[in-house]
Image 1 (cartoon, rainbow, N blue to C red):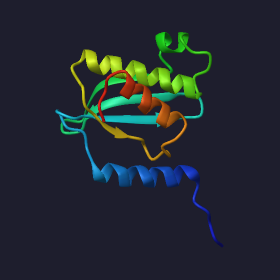
Image 2 (cartoon, rainbow, N blue to C red):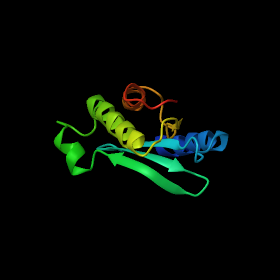
Image 3 (cartoon, helix red, strand yellow):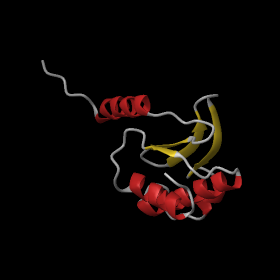
Length: 122
């Protein structure tokens, strides 16, 4: 019997292919994005030492207080602005964007565009 792969399995495979192409360094860390059904998470990671430098998500109280919903395009854009501001405070200006196997549209694109507008370069 033919078994169809789930969307989650397909996304994980795509993410592994993306991760084989690039990694975050100390000079240019990786901006990793994960989207669940209810929230979005963003981290800036230095893969050479395996350390998260900056993180933000819609689960945090101060971020959640600014939003009506935590799973729409406006929430993603706000999260992009927050992660960019926190990165610039730490002195991080350029990053590599890791979309996590998600298609670059909607929330994933909104987060990237907002981070670019707030000052991150990628």
